[in-house]
Image (cartoon, rainbow, N blue to C red; front, side):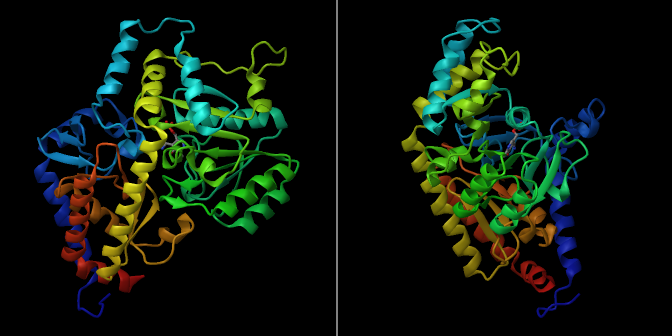
Length: 443
Ligand code: PMP
């Protein structure tokens, strides 16, 4: 295919091949680590999202806003551990909280004063009547869906195409063979009438509707508040439980996105940064539902987990939410992210590139299309090679972002770091302008 500038589609392939070769040449120790790891772990991997061809970078350490790879290169961390790393890598308050927990001894096998304090901080912040803790966001969603199934006696769950709710709740490409065994019905994100119709069609048989109020892993696609409100109302009319997965999005406003939009889902799930950077998840919401887990009840639902109240997470989580990521800090971080996204989009526009950054506040994702994005289907047709090129170019320039184009601010990425990212994106737009034009012509 030849476009107006005379460049061929193959030029994009060769630019990508060059970027990959340069990456391989720069990272011999990462390659050695990968080969060694692959002899004891399938694909050298224990967390699918971290793999990318030809091999992922090995990291040596992190400090403040920076990461260092095994070959000694330094990166500004604009991934923020997929939203969990809001506190940076060595926040003194988190360190003190973890040390205080260690001082008191870990693995006590009983209650401490910490878990109710953490529960109070979480429930007050996110408007939950009651809350319970888990070890991950996946587990929080497992428990939320299980609660809904238990109280409704049904096993059908409505979720959205392209959504991600954990390792066993993956809906990109229609689903995953390792998804938890529910009967899933998938609707199109931000399609209010279609979603309401799908809920009505399953009325009486539906256990729950699960939605992220902004799709995170699905490409940082904000939900329209009316869509969310109609979905809650339709779920209730159909006798189903409305679940907001705020594992990622709770950081986007002082009370999460449900708080920001004034919505009251029956259940909310949390995770990521919420435990101060330690393993953590939580599910909470209305007393009628959460009360079912009260062990004093004859018909109590069980919810077990050796590490659910582990003191490292409880202590770091309290410190994080009450001393560092306060409501004011959340407002400020998201204002910084909002300004950065607006600036990056202005650069894309200025350079006439088929590129945009979607998101809210401190979370955003780069997409290589000019089409407005309201659902993952809207970006899925873009040329995937551009995302890969963007990733390798940013790595070469010293920026750590997700291979899929996700960028998250942390409390360590201040104005200076955002300025440098904007410069790097502008360099990419200038250097790759002809290739972006080829891709635009091809779509
Ligand atoms: N829900 C959402 C929206 C997520 O983004 C994630 C993790 N990326 C999860 C659930 C699962 O959380 P975890 O990785 O802690 O199991």
